[in-house]
Image (cartoon, rainbow, N blue to C red; front, side, top):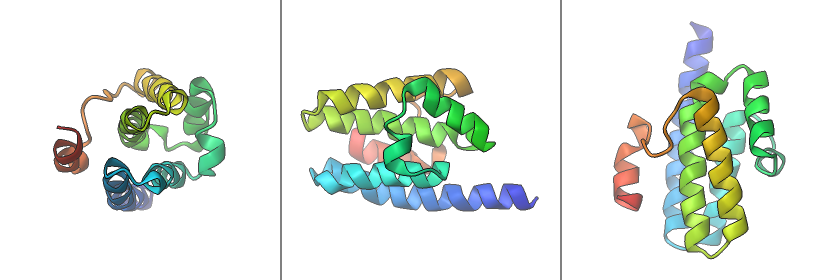
Length: 130
């Protein structure tokens, strides 16, 4: 029960934080991209710079080892895929490609679909990417 409450709490915090960060990034604020990456790192309980520089399979391994991968995978997958789109729009093909590969690896490993936002992020997705 405590584990479930903890997971719900961190997911709630992530949804709030990533929503703010993605809005800033979609508005063209470069720090919004970094803030989105920081939110992903916090959700994974890893340093964002380290976590998001990992090869896709290594990122999945870290998620599995954390013990929370199944609980947060759809959120991580969604955020990585939307980051890829935003990096692409900003002209950073290298970052876009890595984020897209990371999203795909998370999707394949945890059985989530990067094109389908988690319910808590559906309205944001329609607003920014719809």
